[in-house]
Amino acid sequence: MENILIFGIAGIIAFFVFLYFVPLNLWITALFSGVRVGLFDLIFMRIRKVPPRLIVDSMITSTKAGLDITLSDLETHYLAGGHVPSVIKALISADKANIELSFKQAAAIDLAGRDVFDAVQISVNPRVINTPEVTAVAQDGIQLIVKARVTVRASIAQLVGGAGEETILARVGEGIVTSIGSSSSHKDVLENPDKISKLVLSKGLDSGTAFEILSIDIADIDVGDNIGAKLQIEQANAELKVAEAKAEERRAMAVAVEQEMKAKAQNARAMVIEAEATIPLAIAEALRSGNLGIMDYYRLQNIQADTEMRESIAHGGKETKKLDSAK
Image 1: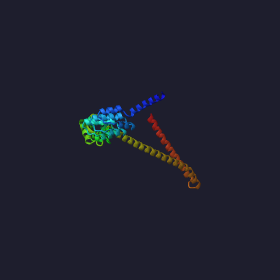
Image 2 (image 1 turned 90 degrees about the vertical axis):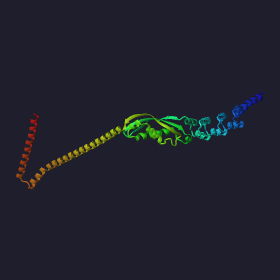
Image 3 (image 1 turned 135 degrees about the vertical axis):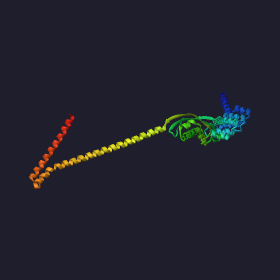
Image 4 (image 1 turned 135 degrees about the horizontal axis):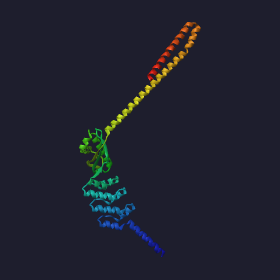
């Protein structure tokens, strides 16, 4: 009895293992859908860790759409890391829109990391990209703030290796700045904003990108600050600071010269005082050596006293005048 139970359990397990590796229902579905898929192909997909339902469903969809795709192509693309359903949808959309797109191109675009189905949709229905605010200054110094709408269409041939939307936005912003910067007055730009679009479109900004620029429309232009006036004010302030610094330098030099002259005057007075201090010694030496007589000495004393009296009288007169003026 135990052996029968063991064999029964083993048989059930073997049956489910058989159904896993041999998906009969999926083979029957493919057969009735007109897709020729062998049972061994499904078994080998299981062994290669390829989901048979994903491949078979994609094969059925492509066959019903009239696409010429083999089972091996889908399996190879899946093993390469591609998104098989997205490629099939992109091929069907391109075929209905009369866009030339082969399976190899679609697979390459998908493996390059781009959404191939979204690219086909953009090729059929162009996308509008809103640029951020672009700030530029005209030659008269007035700042302008511009917003633009860029209508692009995907270029299937450039999707592999072509630049994306960020490059388009950067190039359009550069073109707007160049166009405004070359205008002599901001009024010219405000009067004819289409000049910006024409100039930007003439530069071929979509070269090397995955998109084709259809049109560039200026959505909004705002007048910003007077950059020229600000620069002039800043320049004037800078020149004023330079002039103040030079004036301070001259004042410091004048103060230094004045201090130097005062020091020289003090040195001169000190020398005079020192010389006056040696006069009594010189007179004593002259008296001792006989070069100066007593009468000469008395005469010198009288002259000195007379000089002191005159100075005293002179200082007294000045003080009298000061008192009279004060009264």
